[in-house]
Image 1 (tube, helix red, strand yellow):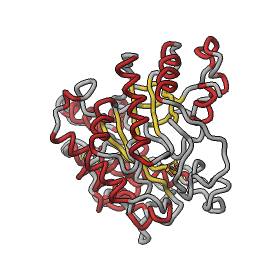
Image 2 (cartoon, rainbow, N blue to C red):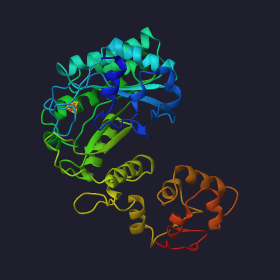
Image 3 (cartoon, helix red, strand yellow):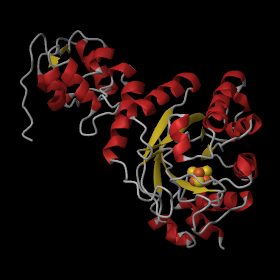
Image 4 (cartoon, protein in one colour):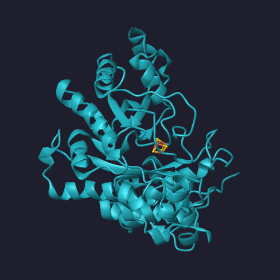
Length: 387
Ligand code: SF4
């Protein structure tokens, strides 16, 4: 099979992988072999990187053959599906070809497990080594850490990559045993996350290819086995505190035919959206976990923005004065984010803000903010939404 045919086979359906902020669907790889035509019509995955850049990313697998039987996964061992594997040389050469053609500017590399996590990890590392040292590849590489990888391998992957990740899949051991009965939550998944942070703390970043240790992240499958939003977000908070992960990704469960979960309903897409909103409230808006508006079952309301729900409960009767409140108070107002809170603080150095239009001109969503604020001691006029 041609190398690009193999990439095409592995790049589709990379299961539940949202390891960068993907802004477009996975690429249409039908046109891969015709390199001369690609630049004009290749609809690549656009990935939003941790540094704010957006790049076309090739998201693929070293091998879509897998010896494990995760209950939700299209690549599980017991499932009859076409598979492909690429050698490190093949894959690295293909990435370079696509890069030189101006088609991709980065690689996200995962793999099914063949002959155990350690041997699989070796193949991913070899691909990255060939890229960095044979081809002097300077673009973005996100490497997956395989379940059960050893510390030397984690270190080597971190020396080569811009980001590393290991998917926890579930927020705790009980939920993981239902999703992926052959995976060991602590020994195979949490341990490598701990190793990543330990290496960052103890080893010099000069060992890394670009002098910086890569960021790390994880991913959860949401909605297949009854985990609550409290479970997911509490584990996320713990991972951020203990292992300094920069992101958690929440991938909606969608049933795959010929898997044990084929008859389960797909999860509500709004649930994923609310989880991301809650994650950003915790990470960027200085919310405490206890402030998130969970219902008695431990879930967020999928119908309502959690920041708005929090404000309805806390700010309607106690609106925030725009002219005197500090940054931490301002960013809790719906419609005001970190950038607009800074603009307000700067504007206040020139005088008192009395008028809702002044906020509007700063780019603040005044229709969301107005019922939760005071302007120089007065509530601004509030236009209720028609619908
Ligand atoms: S380890 Fe599980 S999730 Fe990963 S490819 Fe294999 S079956 Fe799929």
